[in-house]
Image 1 (cartoon, helix red, strand yellow):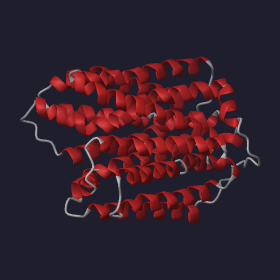
Image 2: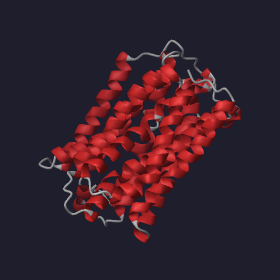
Image 3: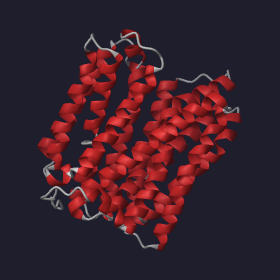
Image 4: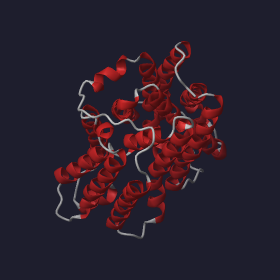
Length: 367
């Protein structure tokens, strides 16, 4: 981001536009995919491949040296649209392969997402000597490789039931299912906290360093570890969910992440760097561990013909919520003591826990 600002003489305020453009593109993309029921009507593996290919082309288009702010934001926005054919469609592919053990398979899938989310922090730490264009070429090449891998090695799953016709009403009909609705609301509460925490991990570390000048942190590497450890947590929660029930493990991890939000101001006061980092590593695990479990509950409680549409709708709303919580923290850190703002992230988990408690009483499918 800083390289783009310097290269194209952009103002610092452009950072927010560049960040939000991808999120807004993803939201629009998921809306389009859901309303047109694309991944239910067409082969999900092919949809995944074409979106990976097109997304990588618009991503690498940033290296052209004649850009303005408008053209850069447009490219980021279009890249976000094609990401809608990656994450929710990937979950649809997993759901087409597994009826039993879906939670475990989604644990690996979301774990891979977490590692991918953390990777830019590591890349920043190890590519200081490389021109910024090479990083874009590398990430775009990896996107093409990922799409090709799915296209060649992952045919349509045995449990896939294709939807043959365009059904625009599916976007609304899916929420008529009470069990699905309860699972989705739990997921929305989780999303309020998740991406805001990820976005603010480097800022949390900087805030602690300012309050405790003796603390010397390698912020990019620590950010990678704090976010990336969630990948391991997703795999672990997938196995635990299969053994003890997705609902039960999701409730426990959401409760733990809620507690982390509420006690965070106390941890900023500690003089022990190792305790502070240990707390953030634990928070990095529990903040994401319930994600594959919620996706499992959503997939299990949507009819097979519109499973991809259901997952896509939930993703669309969930990512819309992330923009609100990120912007809220961004605004409040200017006006109040920043050590207190992370308690507001508990709002989502509290509402999610209420939704999960309702699930308990409605015998939602969770195995």
